[in-house]
Image 1: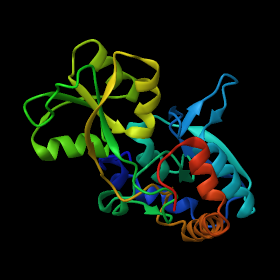
Image 2 (image 1 turned 90 degrees about the vertical axis):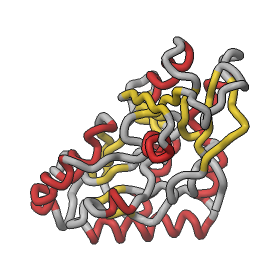
Image 3 (image 1 turned 180 degrees about the horizontal axis):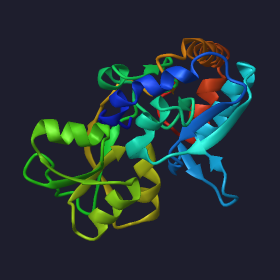
Image 4 (image 1 turned 180 degrees about the vertical axis):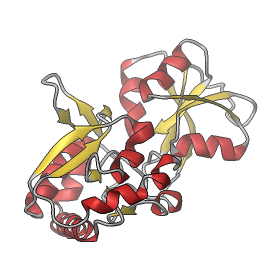
Length: 241
């Protein structure tokens, strides 16, 4: 799933220590711009797979939770500095992130990354320009391959780049791209897919071990009774456990 390059987060680490311990209200931080994982609905509220999942996890953990949104680029630094208590935003569990924050166990398996283009003739390994959202696992993957990468701040801008000719294809989570392919006859999936990342989990400050344990137990209980698989199927996120 989505990746974040860690810079200011390390500097802000000490600020988060003041927020360790019990929480009267747990603030659930998300992006609100990555359907079906998380988005803002017509009523102006956080919605999607992770809203439904997060609400159920809070209920099982007997926590009083509220939702806040934050732009993707600063979502880890603002967790560490205490602006909210968790990240639940389609964030892949990675070694790089784990140096700065902790993660719960995964609540989804790795989602295939797919290429969306306006022609099946695009050769991603042959000099094509590939768009990706900044600081994602897809952007890192393209850079590591040495392919031509163009980055954008939001996922919507990556789609626009393909449609206006700035990029030949976009690489993103297939679950995010699928509605665009279904709704726009000019957009199509290439056959090639990539399996990147180690699944998605909740980001927690390293000082909040008690909170992490509560969410770990809640996630495990949903795995055990099948309700997590039911949500994954409902929102068409990917493979079930």
